[in-house]
Length: 251
Ligand SMILES: CC(C)(COP(=O)(O)OP(=O)(O)OC[C@H]1O[C@@H](n2cnc3c(N)ncnc32)[C@H](O)[C@@H]1OP(=O)(O)O)[C@@H](O)C(=O)NCCC(=O)NCCS
Image: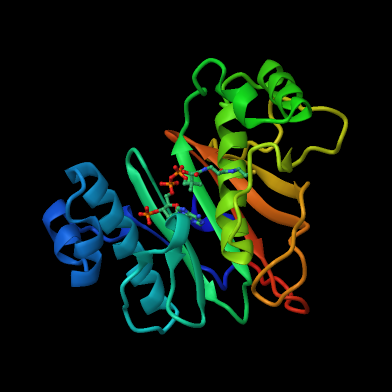
């Protein structure tokens, strides 16, 4: 489900593909990474190591030697020169998505448990029009936690935004539009976006509502586009921003 969210020139790896047990994951860390995470509780160390093991496999698939992935300012992952990437971890899933910087300018991936947000959280993380859309979608297709999906789209937006700008982006600072596959604009239907495997998918647009000045020498960050999916225990959103003049490739 996660790999399908990205075009073919993004290397996407989940920990289930690696087949490494907890001891092997921890043993795969570089000494500088152990220095950074060594004092954390075990669950955090395993998430940190699991996401990095995925990143290392993605580096191999891109033909890049394995290297440490440290946390930089405000937690941003620091990639070797020439790469962009994003990490996520949640109950039962750790993942990394990496690409060559000449193909992809920025990337964001967020996966969460497929469960409704706690009371009051939707209002805290959404614009009024986004919350209204979530309520309408919930009425049409109650089996999908649309609020959790919106939340992943917001966090994927932040993960793509921060490396470009080195600035905070609040939950009110981007407007997300989620469009289920097959939605022809006449309102949600319960089967919109549901494929034969029971995966609900669609596309997303994240419109930046604040000053989008960037620090990478590229144009302002104005709008991000991506894909989302809901399957079984997880909801996920992914964003890929291309450099000017670079076209997408098929998945
Ligand atoms: C940073 C944040 C997005 C992480 O999301 P999360 O669901 O808590 O956690 P995930 O497991 O999915 O992702 C964790 C990874 O995010 C990445 N991350 C953390 N800070 C980051 C930043 N400033 N920029 C890019 N990626 C970042 C890291 O790789 C981290 O993994 P690591 O700690 O092992 O290195 C979240 O904690 C946060 O601060 N959100 C508020 C900002 C926001 O979402 N604004 C909405 C804009 S519309």
